[in-house]
Every structure is written in structure tokens, then in C-alpha cells.
Length: 173
Image (cartoon, rainbow, N blue to C red):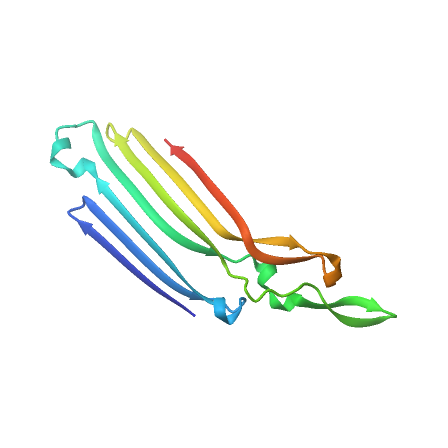
């Protein structure tokens, strides 16, 4: 089950606000971690619509943008409870049911927090169009495989112990 809400606001084609909220359920996780909120906010300012840039005939469009969001990621093979047991092993010609991995009831969906800032620029009757974006994404509960001593009967299990950062600059012209 999922619920989704969206709000867009545009004031005089100069100032833009965007808000989204998603509340999603996923049956592949434990019932305590099944539902998550995924919000996002964005804003933009079209400077080319301001009075102080009216005299700039060479400038067609100039916009500053920024956003923040939280998104979820499901690393499907880890959350698939049907993979906890399998029957592909044979003992003396008979299929047997064996536990494949230690289940982790604390496992959550990965959540990525992203901030983005950008500039859109169009010049000389759209002869030149430039888009510049800076982004920074962080996952603080990345699903990773952890090693454990063989005395447990298994050598690994999955948990949310990883971290990942992705950042960069994109330029398109």
C-alpha cells in the first residue's frame, strides 16, 4: 500500500515551490520496518522574469534551482524471504530443505538523502543553453554483507551497516 501527495506552487512564473510526500509499504521487509516516509522539497527562482534583468535582450532564461529528497531502495535478493530456504541441495538422492542465510528482522530499506542545486541559462534566442547541477547523495543504512565466525553455522548475514556518498557536478550545453 502506498499513499502519495504532491503540491506545486507557481507565483507569477518567477517563484516555484514543489513538495511531495510518499508513504510506502513493502511486504518484503519485517512488519516493524515495512512503512516509510519519502519526502521531497524543491524551489526555483526565475531571475530572467525579474525587472532588473528586463533590459538584457541577450538573456532568454535564467533560473536557479534547489531540491532535497529522500528515496528508498530495495536490494531485492536480500529482502526476498523465499530465498531463506531452498531445496536445490540433495542428500542421498533426496531433496532437502536447508536454511540459506540468517534472517535479519532489523533489516530496513535503504534510504538515500539527496540535495541538488542547479542553474538553467538560455542565451541569444536559445542559441546557447546551459544547465549546471551539483548533487550530493548519502545512504547511511546501505545493505551490506557482514562476515561472522563459522561456528554460527553460516559465514555471513546482511544488515544496514554500510554508508555511501555520491556527489558530483553535471554540465550540459
